Image (cartoon, rainbow, N blue to C red; front, side, top):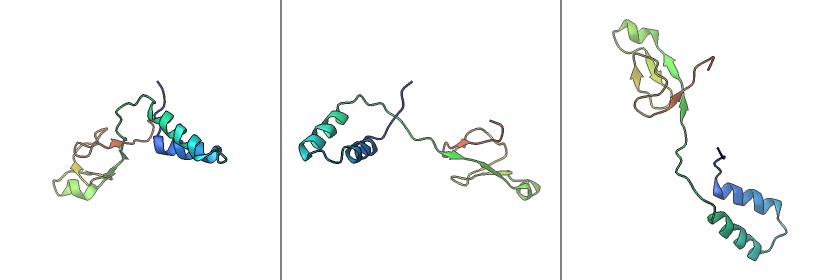
Length: 91
């Protein structure tokens, strides 16, 4: 599987590398990058469950998502509210 890249960042790197190029060459580079096939992609949010033992003592959920603050009684691999992928030690 190929790597996904940010077109504007690729353009910045290439124009920096070829800094002696003319404006016409830069325009041709921008046009060539625009012709590259695209894919739909969504950035992956990464979070972690923050354990609150005092919450469980009160009969509430014991974990909190570090990204959105949603509470959960189970440390699922993903947050059910914001979709963040939860990082766990040993994975």
